[in-house]
Length: 153
Image 1 (tube, helix red, strand yellow):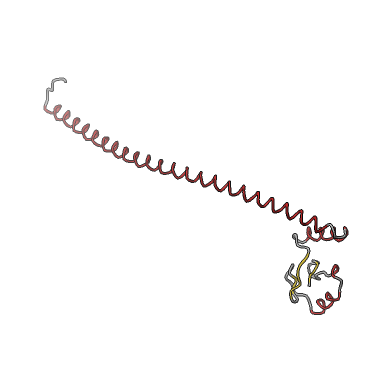
Image 2 (cartoon, one colour):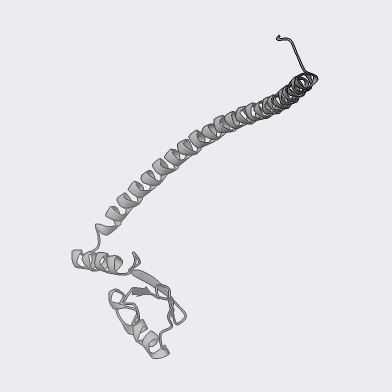
C-alpha cells in the first residue's frame, strides 16, 4: 500500500474498507439466501418430476382403459348391427325404408310407446278420441299426431 500522509486520508480509507466489508457481508447473505432458495427449488423440481412420472403412468393407464372400452363399444355396435340385419330380414322393404326415414328425421327414435295418453317419443299428450282411434288402427299405421312416430300400445 501507499504511505498515508494525512489522517483524513486514513479515515477515508478505513471508511472504504468498512463499506466494502459491509457490502461483502450483504453479498454473502444474499448468496446464502439464494442457495437456500435453490435448494428449495431443486426439492420442488424433484417433487414435480415424481408427480409427472406418476401422472404419465395414470395417463397411460387411462389410455389403455379407453382403448379397451372403445374396442368393447365397437364389438357391441357390430353385434347390434348383426342383430338388426337379422331382424330386418323379415320386414318389408317399404316399411324398413319408412322406418329409416323416420329415424333420420326424429333424432334416431322412430317408434315410441304410448303410456296412458302420453307419447314416449315427444312426451306430449294426445286426446282420448285420438287414443281410441289409434286402438282401432292397424299396428303398422299407428302414428303420434304430434311427432309422427309409430306408436306401440
